[in-house]
Image (cartoon, rainbow, N blue to C red; front, side):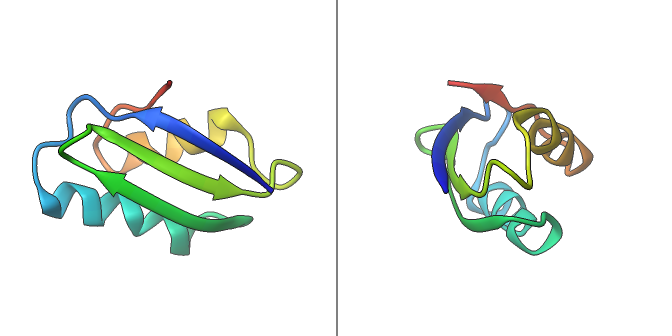
Length: 70
């Protein structure tokens, strides 16, 4: 398991954060996602053998947001 922070510059409210945290159900290998719209970031803990940074960025983009490796 690895824990990584991604900046989400276009997150603007708690609903945005909840939408991003819902990726936990969509992505295989994710143990936990904590999103903070105050910090404009998400911290994701995941199995790096099942999921790549590019897949995470793509999944966030599908939800309508931009993810940048911090």
